[in-house]
Length: 188
Image 1: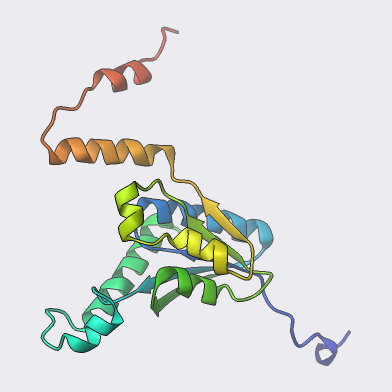
Image 2 (image 1 turned 180 degrees about the horizontal axis):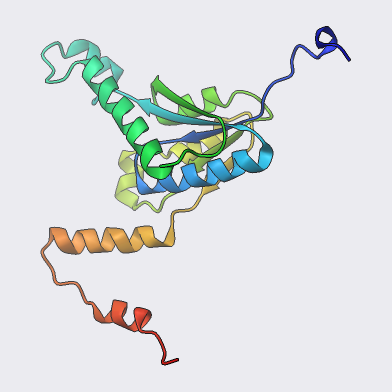
């Protein structure tokens, strides 16, 4: 078959993943890279950003301490830093880092706009108050995406890290007996 006979709609498969810099998004980024490798697909790492207070507030607040360009630069830095920290030697698949302005769930669903895409999102543990104040990106994607969505549970270490962080914030002593029991090796 010659080059002119090739199907004009031949597209490379894509795995789209939401990146926020959180531990959950880092876990999702690892899983998305593994899925992209398995599917011989490109990895699209997407970070969606919004001005604090939303778009309407950003238009009305002319004396805001940061301009939209500053928020965009902060988002770009977060995206690049997260990718470099998660993949110091590269992900092993073609990577596209995408920065978009808008609500994260909507931005991800719009980016993963092909039926053969795979959308990967982190599905972290969230308390009732957090759910009430911040809509779930993974739930939005599951409800609105036109492609399969893979919701990646958080790493088991995430809860331990959060508990240790909370103890540090409150300046509470860390009970090291738990760690000692787990790391003691039996006599050989």
